[in-house]
Image 1 (cartoon, rainbow, N blue to C red):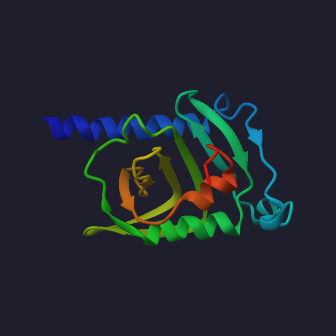
Image 2: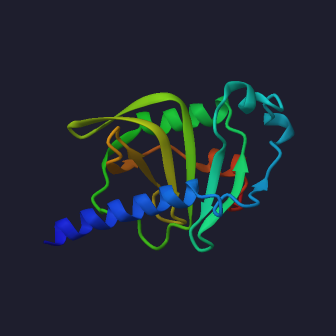
Length: 168
């Protein structure tokens, strides 16, 4: 019974995040960020590629607080995370220490291998959990959520998005 409850909990949490990221009110007035000069992509690269922006969802505020152009650098980071997946997360939900969820739409579907399963996904959701290890959330073609452990460093991503501010 507990396993069923936990599975329902993670599905509901994942659907709430998706709904919040897709709703017009969650997207209202996101703060735009200019890329750092030394890492700047072409000003309209994301527009030219047709990629949806990378979004930062503040869990406490319940809305998207930043939206930045999606570029090759973000795509490369997301692919590295997916390649470094070590397995399914033992917990069924992210804990309360996760303060931000980032959505990185992929340029093309990616295959993720976790334990004995293979998942094809179009988006990667990164859970930033302060001092706890970050988690990835992906959905398969039937919108079934998978919470994943991985071992790549996310600091370059957090610095590029700009929130939360990281100590050097």
